[in-house]
Length: 211
Image (cartoon, rainbow, N blue to C red; front, side, top):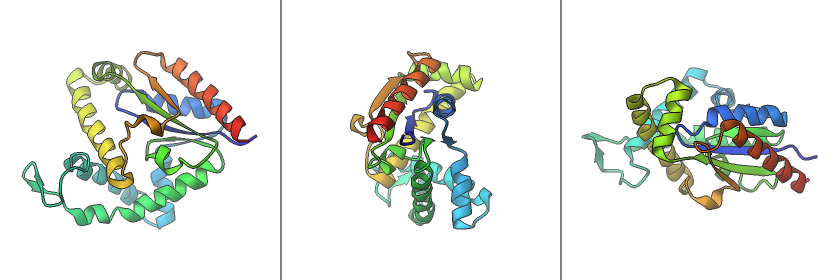
C-alpha cells in the first residue's frame, strides 16, 4: 500500500505539536517539524544554527510585512523592512521544498512549512487544518504550554500573523483557505486524541485510495 502522507497546518494553540507526532506514530511514518531545519542545513552545507536562525529571523521579518500586504517601501513600527533579507531566504525555501518532497516519498507527517501547498499534487497526501476560536486556543495554549493568559494571547497574535504572512509571501495563498485542505478540525472543541484518530483514519483512507 502507498505510504500515507499528512500535512498539518495548525494555528497557535490548536495542538499541532501534540497531534502531529501522535498521528505519525499511529501511521508508522516520520514526523517532520524540528527535523526540517536539520535536513535543510545538511542540503545547503551550512551550520544548523544558521538554518534555524534564518527560519526564526524570516518569521519576524514577515510579521512586519503585515501578511504580505505592505509595499516594500512601507515602514512598519518606524523600521524599514529589509527586502534583501527576504530575497536571501529563497535558497532556504527551495531546500525546504526539496526536503518535503523527498521525505514525503517515504511517508511522513509534516507540520507547517506550507505543506498543503508544496505537496498539493501528491495523490496520497491528506491535508489537514487545525484551528479554533481565539479564546479557546488561548485557553488550550495555557494548558499545553504552561503559560499565563497574557503570554498566550501575545504569542497567538504574533504566531498567527507570521504564519499567515509566510504562506502569503512565498506561496501566494491564504493558509486559512478551505480549498487547501481535505479535513478541517476545531481542535479546541474536540479532544486532541479524537482529532488524532480522525486524521489517522482519513490518512489511511486517502493512501489506500491512491494505491
